[in-house]
Image (tube, rainbow, N blue to C red):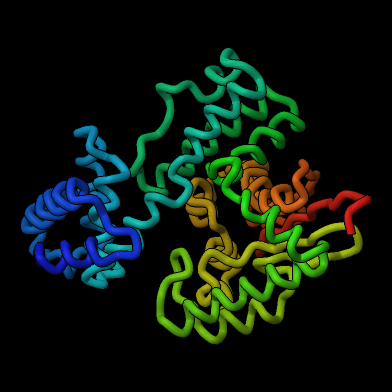
Length: 327
């Protein structure tokens, strides 16, 4: 392990890592390095296979914390081992969804029904592999659809919104007011989204979990409904950018194409394994999609799920209904 280089990497960041975290991060990476020796692997050659085994140990020992996983992701990125970095990064992808769902169930339908559907003792631990997450999701959705009516299911899942804080998009209101209206706000939103993709393409950095190529940028430019959304009358039609765009565009197998489109770590593996996870779970993504618009307009909005890969579509799309009195 390159301790000095890692320390410099952590301290030279735009937001330097505190000294106590550097010490703990280093200890965790050293432990992982020692663990790898039994497989004849190094930190530079480690991959998802070894990480999954190590993660299982962390869970068993109660050491499956965000700080410990952050240590591994930081070091993997520092040495540019993407075969290790991406699976560690995936741990954080929607990691709080079930915990937030537990909270929202209590808020919307009370503790008794919440505990019937998703008791605190039944919450999955941080770090479980995606292949196990889909089973949790299927069970939770079966219970929700049995105990609650469809309206409550939609409302609760939309309120989860990928597990993000409710004020995550609070800065959108200022942007909207400055833009002076929906069309200008949407225009700026799209320009900024494409500019961000082009920046990732040009500097070779990751856009969430994927590298951006010219093909990806051109695909988004060709679909005004993708990424930022498109105004259609008094609605915004928003299609989710595929989870892995390059692979999605190149894939001809329908099942794999749906898999590459799906962003949800709690459902994605069900597509390949033919596990029936209710498409109603995608209302979680619907809530996430309307979140910036609710923040911008400073009011709750209605939406519809139009397409979902869990329903068999090859993309996920939502219609957000705008207020009649807003220009």
